[in-house]
Image 1 (cartoon, one colour):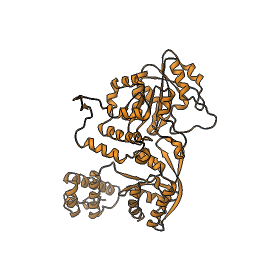
Image 2: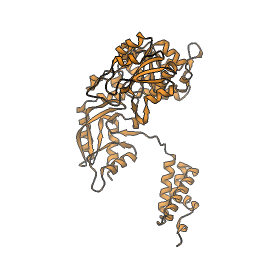
Image 3: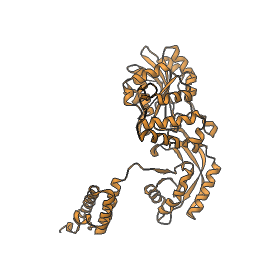
Image 4: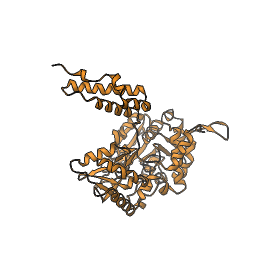
Length: 454
């Protein structure tokens, strides 16, 4: 039997088709030619497997789709309708309008990133956020690197390399992507000393572990899980007293970087850098793109002499922030310094949104979408490794799929549409939680949902 490869068109014939010629004007001939070859290769594989040669129009349409996909940016905006405020897979904290403006201002041209305009000589990029970090945390000094893992790596490398760091077994956490605290400690050259048990660690456990090789005691906030029941842990003040009585450092990895009192929003208490430093921690480390609500960053704040050593550490250059992120962090910290974080920082605006207002929005959207949509009460999660298992009352629009379609397919169409919309599935319905949807995007949902329904 002869395999009908001859039924497939040539590359030149496909390139001469009208839709292809029109696409070339937007994507360019090289991208279009590659797309045609890839589409024909796929067709040849199908024929070789015993299938029929696709019609010419199908080859043309497939090649055009491939060409447009090849030149479209893979990193796209997404409407987060999951109800998870700090969704790690969706980029965590959205930035404030002021932060976006600041980023554009310093990246559109030149800036004084490392130039002292007053003195007319070289300056330091750390200066652009240090004063604000000192102001909002109460620290003597501070610096920022490109994420909190970098902050921890830098601190341990500079202050504990080749020496022991004592930490509770219950705090040897793993966060998203398989990142583990013990692995970073090993990479830094510090030697991990585990004390206590998974659920109970006492001050005497730390005392008994201290040797002549010990450099520091360390706490790591269990931000992405909770141990309940028969538990015991040691507070920062007691650890600081012990560390300082033995000439050691207390290092506190706070994780999410919360600067506000979470209990004011109906959430459990989240530790803050201000409280840890006041309790005696020598250095605190925390993220910039979680509850702080800024860009990806790792903040280190505390004693001035220690921060000065970190800035001189050669590793600091490899971990430094770029100018756009520095501008965004500066603008975000200004919101806290001005007392306007709840109104201006999107993360806190979402957390603070009243459930009644979300119910009204959900009602308007459901009425606009018609009988396939209804309003349901639900709970939003903070997410991002912060406040595990704690939620906020919220309201969502539940979209019921038409017969024969299914919630999985509706969710897929929403994800792959324009704009991309990510919700969650509950009892064969797609839920769109409005706590994490910007009110300006409600109009986009009014067109995206009917399109996904067919």
